[in-house]
Length: 307
Ligand code: CP
Image (cartoon, rainbow, N blue to C red; front, side, top):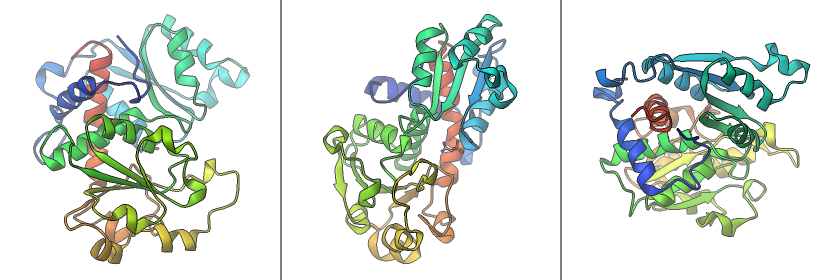
């Protein structure tokens, strides 16, 4: 059993193994599909879903993934728990583990929390987003989406642009790690105030204009501006839409022919993407949501030694 805390240190072989397993949970026309041999793979296992920040896709897909593998998703609500009386995350998880909970899916605004729980509790911890740290299962589902769209496993020769609020994005970090590991070339772009300053650590190309990032990109991952994490100068929405938004005209005139649009969600329609582009045939957004369940089924089985 092992925790899944990030993609920064996950090997190419391990990523490919998880993605190969995940592909088994995607049926025809992307319909959910759990092969019979996995339907009871988590039978008897209770896994706690501990979301200290809002979530739709990650929480629902982990819950569905656990259920479809025959396990029991224990929904933990911090506001209604003894954490309101001052109990720590670690003590909470130790007590749940003592009751037989066998894994912890944790989303938290503080980067350290999934790591401190994983150090203290002898059960697998699944990082469902830790502040601006990582979002490894989002990274994996994005890789699965790109693999299946291309029809191949490795990504040499593929160019991916990630555009928007890079500095606050745990998705950008996990995507960059995963994409680089599978051989893709990556460019990140956004307004200066939303770009990281530790550029060398990212080991990707940086662009300071949207069209430079779009140039030659096969996949364009658009990101939301995370206003809840911006404590400095506010972002001017009109200027952002003009300079960084992607609408039908930008798709027609600036994007590579046949390039695909992705977004981890939630999409702010009319800001980073027009509604028409989000709903267009070039958009993979709902496919990403569908593959989120398959990817999390694979991650759970892989980490819990039930594959
Ligand atoms: N992509 C993502 O993490 O979405 P949620 O915040 O809805 O889980």
